[in-house]
Length: 492
Ligand code: NAD
Image (cartoon, rainbow, N blue to C red):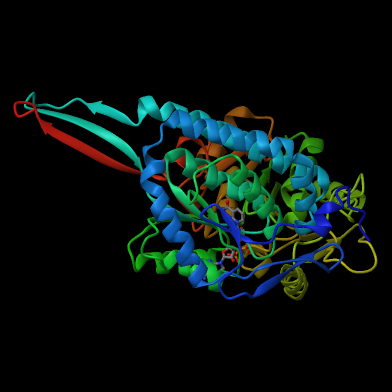
């Protein structure tokens, strides 16, 4: 049994919907159970929202939109900074809720909280700049006209997020949406609503006008689909699986609303023979086992130059063996359970499939006895390029290794996928690193670096991984409409 550092979370987790400035029950009165993946115990029940709740929330957001759009960037900035400070003040509660609901080690949950703080502070600064930058003059080839381009908030936006990085994926959407002047209906994953509802409480307490920010918990079918379909929603920003993203895009197409999609991945880490092998092992392990491999950005394909392939696999196996898997609240634990039973079963099926397809399997480390969705770190070697485990996103602590002989072959192997989210290159040769980074079809390339993500940069991928980009100025632009106002000079 996990010992909670914050016992009050057990007794009074926030569970209601937040609509129009009020915590309320769902229209249908149904509830969903929330499970701790380390113990498989039910730890809370949350409201199971429906299309009726979505409609009430969207209308509240639509009513709040004109006034929120009219606020200054400076005012919105002050509120976003207030949210960041609120998150900081409740850092330990938020981290504990994440570990308890998602299963990630407490140290990883703390990293997520820091990311949330940095994201709100960054978009607060961009909001403040909007007072000067939202409107800009355009030089025209005619003196008869004057033109300005304005960036305006898109309207009511639906934010639909997954369970692997619940608060981070929310912050990457919520902060720029509010900064831009949009009003929001957030749908957390039904698997991990608890940290999201705590984050919602902080946002609520920051003093946003009623209706600007709304949260409807529930399933994808009952809440996500009606949100994507709602005619008053101007834009859907979705992070989740590629299959559901496709569904969201089809639904949004019926009312011609904009979509931003952050979907799956099957990314490579390319290790050249000249690489620092200690660094390579760290980077491969980080890209494969962080968050128990449940990362859209998992570099689960290890593409290694043949002369160092055996050495790298041997050291990876050793690293996997040393990985401490267990209760996310125990000090020293480096990997928790998978976040839900469905994912656990899915990963077990992939491991069985990998074996059936003839890949050589290196399973190392141990998992705690008893309940919990724990999976041992698994490495498949000699994996066929057309095999299921090589081609499909597994979303668990499973690495697949293939060796290469030439740089071109490595690039070809890395790019031979329907996805294109991220890639990592490990080499001491900076000229080659640049060449390979240029050739990789991925939205993010890390060179000799861990998966560090700064809100100032960009997030998103090529091909079936994404439509649009989050973070940086791109993340803000995703929630803006562009309007030109052209005036005849004489008539003015
Ligand atoms: P998922 O697609 O099952 O669910 C994501 C969200 O969509 C949940 O809130 C879910 O309730 C909702 N949903 C489900 N059906 C819906 C429907 N028909 N209409 C509208 N909403 C619906 O994904 P998941 O299992 O929660 O998350 C794992 C996936 O997320 C992985 O594929 C991973 O790669 C991806 N992901 C991508 C990024 C990225 O930045 N590219 C980041 C994190 C996770």
